[in-house]
Length: 113
Length: 114
Image (cartoon, rainbow over all chains, first blue to last red; front, side):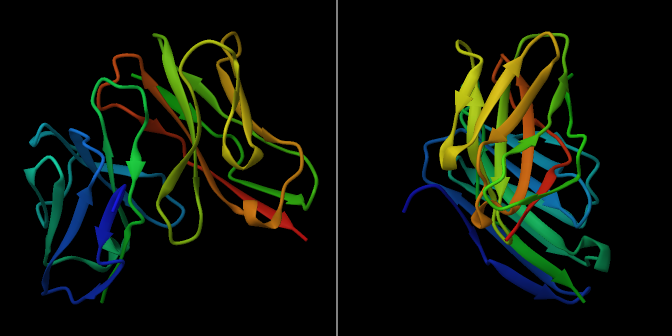
């Protein structure tokens, strides 16, 4: 399998649930990202990992917790979410210091009820 | 830091007509420029990129874009659109360090009308 794979594709969770989103890249990249895409809003960069270390956290609420156990895997742990957290969550990867752009996964459509 | 402005949030166009999606950027340093396409319920897919050299860049699906340094623009064009081109299009910019700093525009929704 090649590219960036995100699972699950769809997730419905209650506000008291705990769930995790998974992202896996098979491109040999060394940087990974989480983006949030809400209707009628620009893409929001949530977290950046470079060489498995978090290098950016854009004022994301603590109910979102990222984890990058190795350069190929990225998780987003979710707990006690709010309905306004419903969105498409996109994972991307890139090779740092190479101008090739980002490769995106297909996203996880999250609905918080 | 860099920023990107996509002036048109929505562009309707008839099938087989030409289309131009506008993108302007702001940066104090030299940049790389990208266009991405997002089909419904999908992630973003790279259409084309400008790194250096010829200012006219050709991408997938018959799209092309022209880098204009004096006007700080990178408009996307297609001479004849198809129904399947209906999607959201994002312009993006990064500086030439290649670091983790890709900045996206707010997107343009292209709707092709049969």
